[in-house]
Length: 352
Image 1 (tube, helix red, strand yellow):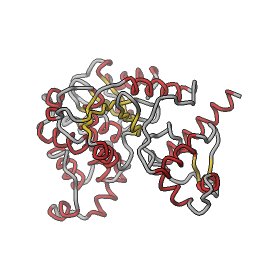
Image 2 (cartoon, helix red, strand yellow):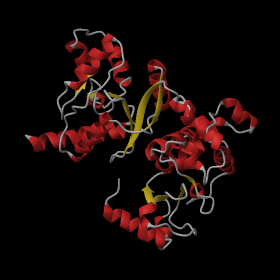
Image 3 (tube, rainbow, N blue to C red):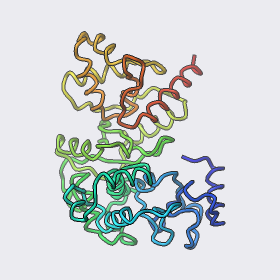
Image 4 (cartoon, rainbow, N blue to C red):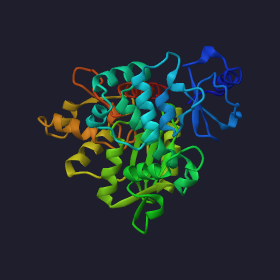
């Protein structure tokens, strides 16, 4: 999230088509659903219709598609023909899940694609395609539109494709939800990027960063386990966790009281409950947790349970590190893990 000062700076640069800001920020235009670079020749939107991003991935996950006039994916350096072909292929069929055979049909080497996309956009092609696909489905969550066609009636060429993408992630098209078990999903903006919250009226089932690798599979497992449909909306539980997350990032409160549903085995629940006991500003190693649970040889199993946590921050799996003091892994990314630990240490020192 940008400060008001930074937003005004970027908007001024957008109005002036300032080339010095090319690659520094991207702007999503809410009225058209596209994202542009600072020098886009198109008519400038009003400030209230702008949303600014520092990376292509952020813009894609926010459900914006590349502008055809300023071609933000081709700047500041002209991209290779391979990237052009694949970017166009994604736009023609954004819900497609790419496989090795697809690259062979295009006579494109997978390793070359991975290297070029990583260098140009800071992510692999698979990550790019996933971000585009997730952006389409999650965009509907963010906007709370009851019918997907209403959202995509202007701009998206494939309404059926969008419905398919939504169905694959959320489990059912909005017009076919029926009277099955219904969970609500909502978009929560944070300083570390957007998060997705899924809950019913009784508790929170999932809270994850929207760009987490494997999020689609997590949602699919949740949907199948509960035999539920997941639709855009809010519950009192979502309102509660949104408020608590806001306080957390503001450093006002590090305690979460929102009721949660822990879906897992007895052992998994034991580990997750132990994670909640790790004090703010402190850390534990997997081995230490194993000893606390009186299962000293189960530290690898505990690491797996830690990675299976679906309630980011609320169940503080980011407070678990390697025995040698290194951060170890984190589903939301190591950079976020370090930020969260630093944030909590600062907040704890201020509260003493």
